[in-house]
Image (cartoon, rainbow, N blue to C red):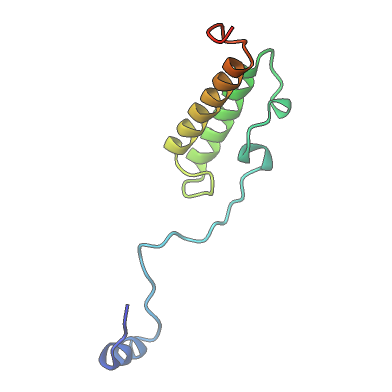
Amino acid sequence: MCLTPGLLSFVLRQGGLMVAMHRRPPLTVVPPPELLEFDPVEWPAEQWWQSCELWGAARMAFVKQHPGSELGSPLTVLREKHRLYEERRRSLWEAGLGGAAS
């Protein structure tokens, strides 16, 4: 935004600078490190997918309690879980454990 001399004097007469209202507020809540990236070791369960579900549920709960955090929105959480499942499926397929590759 370009401040013309007239607009600048109006802003200064109002007693402050204009702040963009569309910007996010500064991050005040930092998510726990175990929620930033999925590590099955940090989420013990019998199987990999159970660990992923535990992590996803904890991440979803955090996102719902702290909207606007660096973890994103609930949709971001669902997309990340989907990405993890697809990454896992692909690694198993490439390793020949998926049935189709053997």
